[in-house]
Image (cartoon, rainbow, N blue to C red):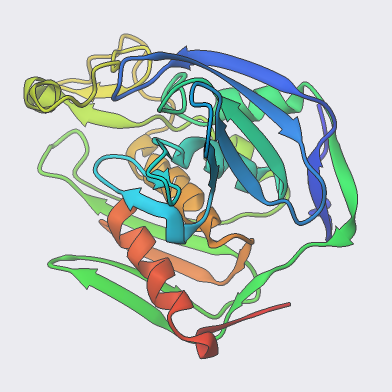
Length: 290
């Protein structure tokens, strides 16, 4: 087990290649993904191995092309990779700045619906410090975006902390809130194993729209009218809001650097998270790199 509590000031990558395979949540397609070490300032890039040319997609807010039930990034040639948020969340939680991700299909595998499989995969190998300092994105002004009764905001803060509230018309989910400061490796214990969730009543509608084709009780918490359908129940009593935090950490890591600031999400999702970053970067007075 690798101690990550020192939150290195140096950029980091993985020490050796690792591979993982699984099904895409929405596409239902089996995919294999290889993660490779990368040099300083490389960033996080996906490479579609099943496509020959123009197949590199940089994991950045400006490349987000679709936010319907997941986050999809595309390059200028229209080559895309979807459902990247759980992997991005794991990379953020483990402080990995530079990595090359080769994938042989259109969607990151969903694994168990959380990010713990990606965390465990990287835990098998060591993390390598590089010779350049990390760039930290410091939030300088309050930024807020809203849509009806949902909102997302960033405020100046001396570290990255996250506060989230949800409210679903289901007595099994209902209102939940959770606040976390990501310190001393608590991403793995408090967030990484929180799974994505959906409602039994929505399954047929989603599938008729070509979504959730790979979804099952193995990779999502399914909420019925009166009970959770998964035989093993919930991993946390507030697993639903913790998963929303997991998603938000992944979406915010598309800033291209770790954020120093306070994030508050009120029923926010992938679309508002991306709009928040677009609003942040629209004015250079909103932020600075330290």
